[in-house]
Length: 78
Image (tube, rainbow, N blue to C red; front, side, top):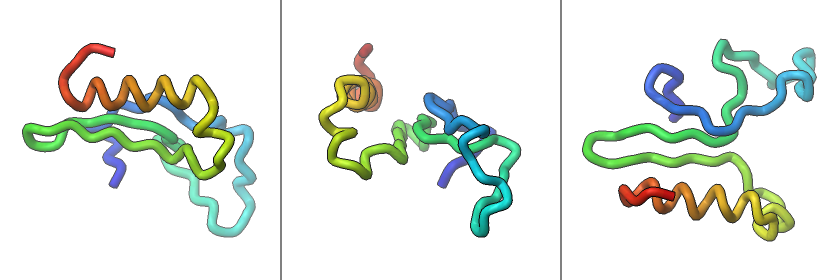
């Protein structure tokens, strides 16, 4: 689960793109993180909410995000 105090947000949803009056939409003080990292014990956690559409996986920016996340998670510099 996302922890707004101990996570480093990499990507956040533009709040202007959210219909706040729509059912099921709950505004949080930390917004809508789409990608974040944090430490967990002696390990590292990376999360992204992106990747639901096949076209995203072909996007060079998304691929770079994943490669950098993998390198970061194993303690290597991206």
